Image 1: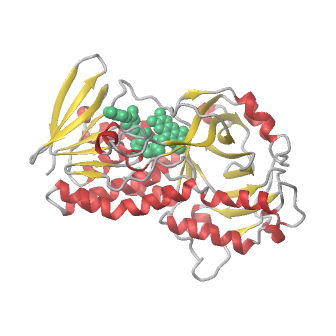
Image 2: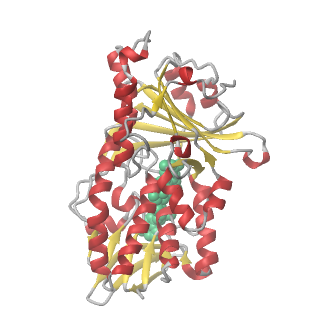
Image 3: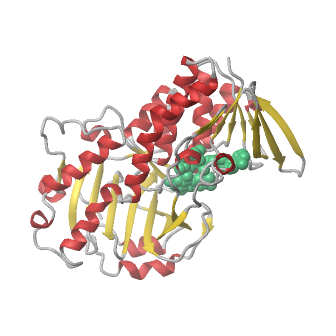
Length: 427
Ligand SMILES: Cc1cc2nc3c(=O)[nH]c(=O)nc-3n(C[C@H](O)[C@H](O)[C@H](O)COP(=O)(O)OP(=O)(O)OC[C@H]3O[C@@H](n4cnc5c(N)ncnc54)[C@H](O)[C@@H]3O)c2cc1C
């Protein structure tokens, strides 16, 4: 049985520890921060991610802390509907798509790791600064939060140390530094009454000006009787530091939505009422040509930092954890297991990363803006026919490993909410 170190107690590292533990491994996690806090805002967990929670025996805990996604609706910069699709089981998938607070999810995973693996499974305040390896194992140099330093030795190392991974930098010293995309993200949360019944993700705007995504991440948040709403605005803006927790002032972005009128939501008020807003640059991390160096392997954001768009960050890290564990069971030699893991995952994930940089399915908002020259339309079917939009979405779902049920049988999967009249629209 391998003696494995995991670097980083983010969702990727924690889920990997749980997957390995299910198969009889007992990894040790080294985490840089001295205390884990529920940081971050919303994340969108796709159906394949929910399946992973089920297999980890955590489905009920995950359901209790998250909100089910029922539909996903796209609007232009004037609040005119472009396209809609159902989500998760409402689309015919076997599992739900759910929205959750990233930090609360991380804390749930952390507690579970301590319960299942023991309190000493996670070493906090331990920043890994470099690795060295020989034929038998890997030595990690660690800087402790209290100023001290130590070396630890393990048979193999899984680096899940996130977007600024120290291990990736050592493994790929000549890889191009990340590049600013020209887009700045404003990530906020607002407490308010449920929007459209409380299970909808809204995609708004014109990418040439600014766009917004809105979804609920907690019901009856802290017994307030209100939903905690996550929102993300993308603007074409100045470069900022790539820090998940850089605080921002929302006043600057409110005018960008002057034209956007929805019958059931005042988006400018939503921004105005924010409890917290964080600024984050969209930075292009270029796909790597390997995630492996002998007994050391990258996983999650360390291997494939993507734009936090399209709900893939945590979901893909969970799939990494599953495949990596399978390979470690199959192969006695961790270096071989890591090479097999790389072969099974890297190309697929690099394609998703590329797709997200090209806006993924959100591209329909740009297509409509360009085809209408940024003006309101009379009939969306003459601007973006349903079948054309359906094709874009079906390709995307297949790409991320969840082909749309019914698509191959020629069933139409998208719709217009005013035609279906499937949901009661509430103010
Ligand atoms: C504070 C924070 C807030 C985030 N908020 C959001 C959000 O709101 N929405 C969203 O979509 N995504 C967010 N993300 C990213 C999201 O968590 C990841 O895309 C996804 O979970 C994949 O997780 P990961 O475990 O690979 O990386 P991460 O979640 O980034 O976790 C990496 C972990 O490694 C630790 N670490 C880093 N360097 C070292 C080191 N040298 N030694 C030891 N430990 C180290 C970090 O402290 C962190 O706990 C956030 C990430 C962080 C760190």
